[in-house]
Structures are given as C-alpha cells and as structure tokens.
Length: 353
Ligand SMILES: Cc1ncc(COP(=O)(O)O)c(C=O)c1O
Image (tube, rainbow, N blue to C red; front, side):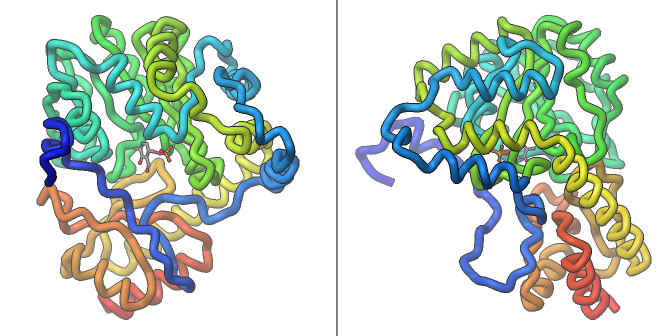
C-alpha cells in the first residue's frame, strides 16, 4: 500500500502464476508446460536471429508470423492477431471486446486470470456454475450479456466441450462476442476455428506455450473476423507497438511450420495421459475426462492439499487450488514424459497405498 498508488492499483487482486522453482531435480508438473523441448528447427531459427539486426525494431505488424499462422489455420492474415503470450492477447480482448454495459459471463470454475482482467479494466462479470459433473452447459449462457468467455478444454478441469455445443451457443448468442480460449485444444479437443468464417462474433485464442513447447518465448494469437481483429490492433497500438520481438517471431514461425514435430509431440503427450489416467484409476483416484495436457484428479481418502504437500517431499510439484471449495480435493497434474509419470505413480502409490 502506498499513497502513490492509483485507485485501480489499490483494488487489484493480481493473478498468481504457478511456481517456477529455482531447484534442480524436480519433477515439475505444475504449470502445464510441454515435457518435450521445442522443435530443433525453432532452435536453429533462434540462433540465426542472434545477429546485428537486433539493433533494429521488429516488424510492428508481425506480417511473416501472421502468414505462418494463417497457413496452418486456413485463414487470411487479417483474421489473425498476435501478442506476447495468449495472456497479453486475452488482456487486449477483455479491454477491446468484452467491456460493455451488460456483464461478461464465464464459468465459476475456469482460468483464474479472467476475473483479474475484469478487475484491471473494471468490467462487470457474472460467473455461471459448472454442472455437478464439472461440464459447461451452454444453455446456461442464454441470457443478456456483454460477452462470453471460457476455455475449451476448460481449465483446470481439462474437460472438453463438443463443437456442436459451441455452435449451438453461437446460433443463440449473436449480439456479443464469444471467446473460446483454446490454449490446450491440440491435446485432443475439437477446435472452433472451423466456425470463424460463419460467425463474425466468434474469437478463438491459441498459445504456442503448450502444444508448441514455447512457454519461454511468449507468443499467443487470436483468430476471428477482421472487425474483431481490428479492435485488438487498435488496443495493441495504444499500448505497445512491438509485442513480438525478433526472437519470438523467428521461433514462432519455425514452430508453426514444423507440423510433423508438433503432431508427434502432441500424440506422445496424449498417449502418456491415457496411460497415467488408467494407472491413477487403479490407485483409487477419480479422474475427470481430459482433452488437455493435464488431468484433474482426486483420491477419496486423501485431501488435495495433503497430497500436494506429500508429493513435494518426493520432489514432485503439481498444482492445487484451495478455492472454490468444490475443487479443493483435486490436484491438477501436468502430463510429463512417461519416465516422469513413473516417478509420480510410485510416489503416489507410496502415499495412498
Ligand atoms: C486457459 C489458459 N489460457 C491462457 C493461458 C495463457 O498462456 P500463455 O500466456 O502462456 O500463452 C493459460 C496458461 O496457463 C491457460 O491455462
């Protein structure tokens, strides 16, 4: 607290990111990073970028990166917005497209950054409870609103929502923007990108932090109609003209172009997830269905906080959310390599066994 702070800063409740411990030898399954490094082509592109040209500003419009993204998604470059991680893209989305006189709607259990953006930009919001099985019922969003946002698959549950449900929502909700945050979509969830040319109020956000193994480079993007994209560009150019630096651009282009590596590593993560779910069920855990690179699991005899603390004693870190109370018994476990799953399973069988 300081008398020098603005009123907005006094009222902020900032987002708390998952821990990035400085210790070595940890099995780090707490922030949904990819256990596999980026494509070797990304590393080669980054090395080339370490050159005299760093004295020059990057392209403020990121045209080359937008073209690479457009090609992957079969869209035009004017349907793409890029930013410094999808968190920055989302921040601009909240300010540019979701601040209206009616409340923004999002699930009660979801990405905990959403209410933080609402606090920062003074956006009124209303949370819509997930069903008892933690699924999203799109009919619950059929009410006057200033916008709708949720991740698909949802976080931290990992539960995917079928594309037909999203289209049902879009058919009814035509007067405000619907944002589908597809940070984890590449791990087995149907993407809504195919609906973009039919629904001018649909915006889809993606990140290179998860399926493209580039959390450290900070690149994310939004896909939608040119009018929605223009709103985001207007905010970006009133904030920071160069969110994508020369390294981020070179690395992200190489990552978007290496489809074979992307597909191989995503399939490996999915295969490890399915094996881990089977083994956790055998240990007496209940695991929610997952279309993501993490799972949400609980044990009927052990509390989530206790399991998380005991795993830490085994040098394994996972994410536990104390609130809301409905999810306090759960652990969110990022899918690592098969070897990391083995370490996790042997620790858990010791703890619960
Ligand atoms: C649902 C969801 N959306 C967006 C993000 C932000 O990702 P990034 O800023 O790394 O692109 C995350 C990160 O964990 C997330 O869980």
